[in-house]
Length: 85
Image 1 (cartoon, rainbow, N blue to C red):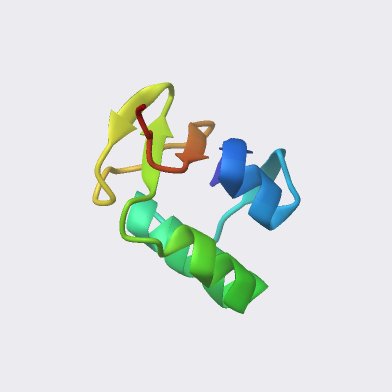
Image 2 (cartoon, rainbow, N blue to C red; image 1 turned 135 degrees about the vertical axis):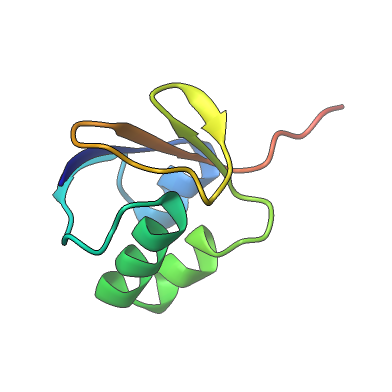
C-alpha cells in the first residue's frame, strides 16, 4: 500500500523530514501499525517522536485515533500536540 506521509511543526523538525511517499508492507493496515513499522525501520529517534503519548494523527485531513484503518493513497499527517496560551 502506498501512503503519503506529512510531518508538521516540531515533528518535522525532530525527524528532519516534511513529507514522503511510502510503500508499506501488507501487514500495515492501521495507523498504529504504520507507526510501529516506521519505528522498526528507522530507529530510536523515530520512536521518541512517533510513540509520544500526545501525538496527533490525521488521515485525509481528518483527525483519527491510532486504530484508524488506512487505504491505498491515504495522506497521513503527524502533528505535535496543540498548545494554547
